[in-house]
Length: 152
Picture (cartoon, rainbow, N blue to C red):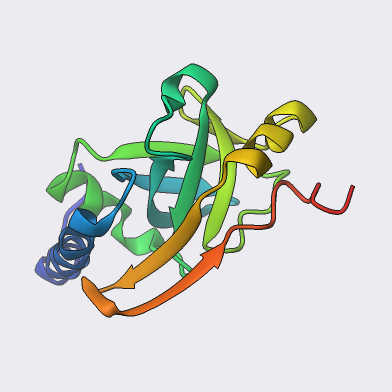
């Protein structure tokens, strides 16, 4: 096991505190993840597309990820939160933004096929981003970009 320094542990604990303050506002509920994508590590979460859907049946989720990478903190995250789900994004897809609708099979993040994309377009909800648990500071928007297929 790599040596963990106190500063890395403290940074991870601060990130997890911020995440914990936001989780009560997440609907549908959020599952916290570490995302491996294009040789970088990102922190985020996955949610069902709708409150009333069972993502496990179709594998379609909303993926939220950090805008910056946390490569140096991977071991600290694994130490502090060993149960955190680790996902691996397909390098062929563009996960550079913060919000994505994706298909997850086992621990792999993939784009959806055309049929799944059409279903997602019909079932998307408005997303509200909450910053540090302060509901008065938020933006509302509908997630419009699906797998680069929205113009087809």
